Amino acid sequence: MKKMLTLEAFEEASEEVRKVAFETKLIYSDFYSKLTENKVYFKPENMQLTGAYKLRGAYYKISTLSPEDRQKGLITASAGNHAQGVAYAAKAFGAKAVIVMPTTTPLIKVNRTKSYGAEVILYGDVYDDSCAKALELAEEKGYTFIHPFDDLAVATGQGTIAMEIFKELPLVDYILVPIGGGGLATGVSTLAKMLNPNIKVIGVEPEHANCMQESFNAGKVIELESVSTIADGTAVKKPGEKIFPYLKENLDDIITVADEELVVAFLDMVESHKMVVENSGLLTVAALKKLDVKGKKIVSILSGGNMDVITMSSVVQQGLIFRDRIFTVSVLLPDKPGMLSKVSQVIASLNGNVIKLEHNQFVSINRNAAVELRITLEAFGTEHKNEILGKLEEEGYKPKIVRTNI
Image 1 (tube, rainbow, N blue to C red):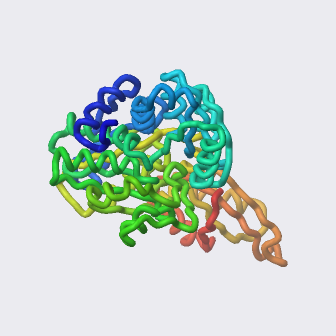
Image 2 (spheres, rainbow, N blue to C red; image 1 turned 60 degrees about the vertical axis):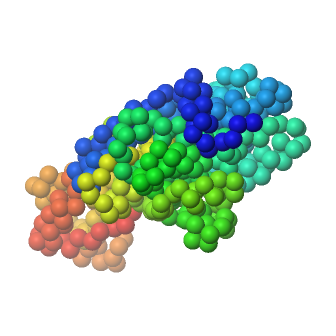
Image 3 (tube, helix red, strand yellow; image 1 turned 180 degrees about the horizontal axis):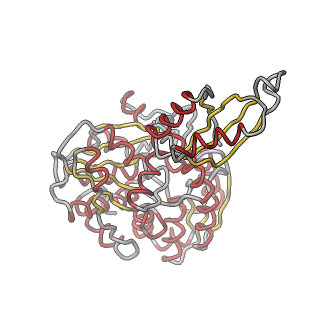
């Protein structure tokens, strides 16, 4: 069997993957280039067939299996993107696919996985629970297990992304890669260092799902007690054992990103690039603001775009709140006719847009002295918000910001 993570294997993987995957072209980001004073490019795997890069590793791995192993049926565990990759690849090879997914997996990922002909089993709260169940079923039913990240063939398939990056941008200085279990980072960093030992490859993890960072600090694979992040595709408690040595050798650093930063990054991508990128794929976008470099050519890998509409609407709403584009203010005023109109006129004079009103007459025993009016407003940003608050203060309404999710 061919040794994986070699230049020969990467070249073979590129040929194989080309049969099913798009060669996603780099997109120059004028917005982030100006913001960071670098030349920033996106590798838009959110536009990939099945909506994520995972198809690459899954298809290449399955291509290396014997016909007998494929005929046994394939099983894997995934929060969604690897599931779709395996399901699609299995269908291409005429093999049965069984996918175990966490119960928290967005419905869009579950339905799309089923649409490729796979049997879906929902089990556990996080990927690690699902993986244990998949391994149990593999043993029980004789299925061939396709690990989503801790597999050298899978990692080799993911590394084809680096091949495409160098083909388009040979003098790239930095590649930012999201990390869940580490398969994508293994393939990309290993091939990138082969092609240019001086390149910097930076891994990016969620702040509260940083199993790779903790493992790097300990010098060995560490399992977190729990993970908590809106980046469900990277909600992994323990990185891969087999791939860890490659990451230690080839990954230059790991950056962590808070969920709030992902929310803001989503808004940036929608407004500035008209692209939907799932939270895991936004890790490398949010990390751009944390790189202390100037004048460099940087590629951020957008790992996927499979986000359900409900999650999307929640993220947009939170992003508007974080950007002070929406805020709620409480004012106290006498319970007299015309008072609401007066407050509205103050807001309207500064082009504030009222989107919700709540009137509480029971905030005080003496209603003549004060009733509470909560106003949810749309503004242009922080400066405009402060201008509106200042005007309300000037008019004697003593405004107070109310922390709310609307």
